[in-house]
Length: 536
Image (cartoon, rainbow, N blue to C red; front, top):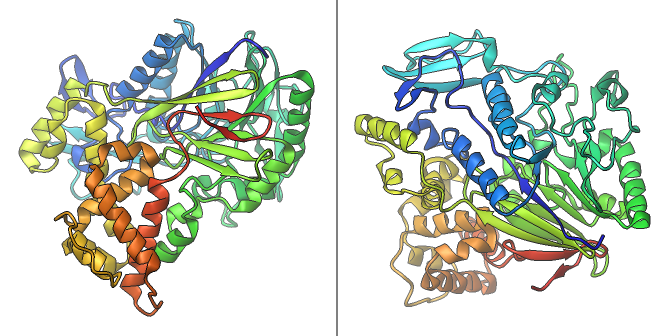
């Protein structure tokens, strides 16, 4: 391939249609009724529903402005598979399709569930508080003005969901230069079945050539394992280990595709919703030591996944799911595998990736949505809610999306992450101590540290976790230097394991070092034949 091929990669759009009919009366907006999540709920959530539509439109406008015609939707393109948002997304994508964009999607864990779907429940603002809107008749909420039960809130099963939004690449189209599945070229779902015990499920994976010379391996990594009680295991925390356990045929397919791509001179890039390498900068051991079998720890794939995929000849893979921005690499120089973790549109840092492939090299750019204006209609309704509850006013000071999302991420640290994830003794310490107090546990006499609450350090820590090295620009240099000094002191300190808090803080600062000094996660180049990360 000599001419450059360009694609955009968007992960975890979690589109919620604020104008959709969810069965609730909603609240009055300047152009009609709006179905909005309460700001109070958004203050505790890792993703924002009300901003998802404007964020996706802003991203797609940015794709068009760059002259790119093909967009990869890396799973979780719907909020939670609720039918009004599925239908709203179909309308939105059709608008951009009419303007020349082409979409190539793969499923995430929020888009579909098992053979028959599952119930979903949300709280939406109404004129007299909020309504609980659900597809589950047994759902309850004592604070709700009304409980509305509707099948429209249900997330559909795989077969229904795959056909709910047309022209997403799950079946071949006239503009596809090549299209196949692990089972051949028959697009019928009945021809794309694999067994799990006595059950049979659809594998929606496919290979497509959207641009001449570029092969995109679109991998359905959702696996719904029977739970023994008539239901299905949630793939959210399962990821690639379960794929390899129940779909061993995909490795043979990957190897065959990679071999043919090399013989035909095609550039090959793989995509799936779940990471194939640790997207937390190699902090898995500290994560497990601090938090045990946390949701994050369960989503970090073991090295066995990387070894299996590396052996097939794959060199570059894009993932979503964890709402982080990261570059990870596995394997020796000249023969490695790179995983690019694409951030969400509805979490910090909100952004997408642009990939330009030319002469066997992939140049990957990170495009942030920082300059997007906050939607005025949503902001006005937020202001009304803040006036009633007194909560969240600090978020309304931001007129653009980037600062708003950064403030939201910092807000989550004491309101969600500390409360849900951290050991109780560290929760108490981080809530009350100063940065100097934390440093004291290293046993070193560190002077000249900034007068900061420990919570400020932890908020910076979470920004680095989410955005990688891109977050450094938003943290004052003197703070980063102070954190480095403390981390060095803990690394040198002979801390017995019996000194629990000191040992835990040593792990926290070791994680900080890895978060703050990982591989480039903004703009990079990858050699598609070797998996090497190149300078410039």
